[in-house]
Structure formats: structure tokens, C-alpha cells
Image (cartoon, rainbow, N blue to C red):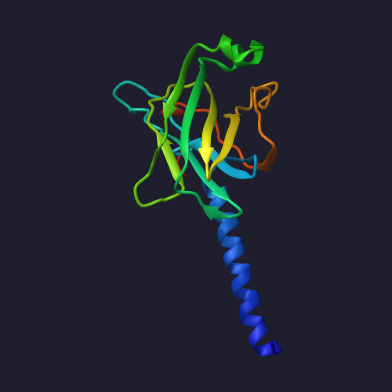
Length: 183
């Protein structure tokens, strides 16, 4: 290939790569690899705002974007287990997930129509700490990854995490609607 034809190809490759990286960061999710499957896990909206009566409903679905070798997976069967700690101090003192304030297990994740690799499970959240375990099958491969939200007051934000590889990113623990500031 001559140099004049190569430059546009290189530029296009860089633009596509940067777009993919930007999209991953824009999700504000924890991205992990488990058993060769890449999972991007977090709340449906960031920042996640906890329920406040007469101010904010607090609906933020748990989302999991699932890919393998960069390609979408549309035949996954996934469940999500959820653990909730009402405060960061309760989370900090916990040594087991069974010490969570509330637990909900084996919740079915459904594919979001029109997005073949993004799965969701509805929930209403409050301020506090959320830990999610995504488990099931994707492309006939078993996946089982546990991740949690991050808050500046945590002494160890990853103590309950489990997966093969941490690709990066994180999702924040819910904040109050009054804590949001506009420019």
C-alpha cells in the first residue's frame, strides 16, 4: 500500500480506537474479564442518585455490557445478585457479603431491545454501597464476576471483587440529589 493510501487508514483506525475507548469511559462502569468474556458493569445512569421522596425516584438499572474478543454477545443467560449496605461505614466494617443490609439473588437480566450485548435488571436505589455479582452463561462460557461501587470514604473498595482481569473503570456509589452541583 502506498503512503497516500496508508495515512487515511491509520487516521481512521485511530479515530475508531479512540471512539471505543471514549465510549467505555463514558459508561462509567467497572470493566472486567472473566473466563474470556468482557463485562462492563454499573448503574444505568451516572452519577447514580438515590431515591429521595418527592425529589427523585431513584431508578437506576443494573447494566452489564457483554462482549467476547470485542464482539457483541446476544445469546447470554445472565443473573445478578445484589448486596446493599446502607452506609460506607457498614461496608467498611463488613468481612462477608452476608453482612449486607439487604440482599437480592438470582435476578434475571434481560437484553435491552436494540442493543444486542447490553443486559439490564431494574432496581430502585438509595444512598449507600452496592455490590453486584453477574453470573451465568455467555457464548456457552460460564461467567461469574463480582464488583462494587466506589466511594471516597471506603477503606478498601475492592474487597469483595472477583474476576480474572481488571480492565479498568469504576462506577460511583449513589449520591443524594442535593449533592449535585450545576455550573
